[in-house]
Length: 358
Image (cartoon, rainbow, N blue to C red):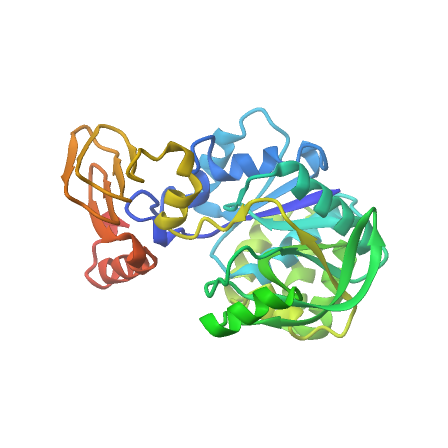
């Protein structure tokens, strides 16, 4: 199996640690290794290194090459970010150029997977289904009525996928309100949409041709350039003019082809905020539910997350459910329940022309 790892995100919700020069996927967020490296490592049982394609921002190529020094991972630098539809299309074209005719897994670089073996089994099952046609997505079995994720609704029809069930997809559903999410959870027919897809390169390219003809035309120009050594030049000319749109909107909500979902229980998290890190690292909490990093001193604090990333002590007294992230250049203090709004800090800094802090 080939794999296309999408590593072009900006990670604004992890400011001030995640910056333009080193976004979330290149940071050691979960305590083991940079997230993009962890993503590659969990694919070892499914894909050889030369079958892995990283699609990332052009400005991060140097960082990625350092992380993967001496390894045979392919790297494609996007001149500008254009969301997941162009990214997946580019990955499909390049995988086909490398000779891939079988299944390709398209997955984000910045997710956490607690059970890599279960994840691998689900991907392998999805690959078997994808090779007979259509697009397969992994559906994360929900553990709570989450309002921050999109959902996938399955039908009652299923087929065997290497000992696992692959269901036909009825619909993709936008982020619901709490009441609707509770109904989804109790029905057993809905899964979290993790944005992980498995298909052959030809299936992806054919769907793009049907539903996104302008993107298809651009990809064909890039494909031709791969044959005569003009890839970088053509990519730089074509990519900035492509529509910025997600694969879900551009393809999955329009396709009339077969679409399947393979349920997956693998301890998944999109690691979408500082609060999710606090939750993921529960085993490292103190007796009062605090998680701290670096040189910190916590007195009478409860359920807080304190990170000292500079050369000074960060002392906190009487905090409850708070987030404190100290770096040499900036300090963030927030309520953990409001940490999704950190991206608004980034937006405001852009308006104020504070580029050095981004």
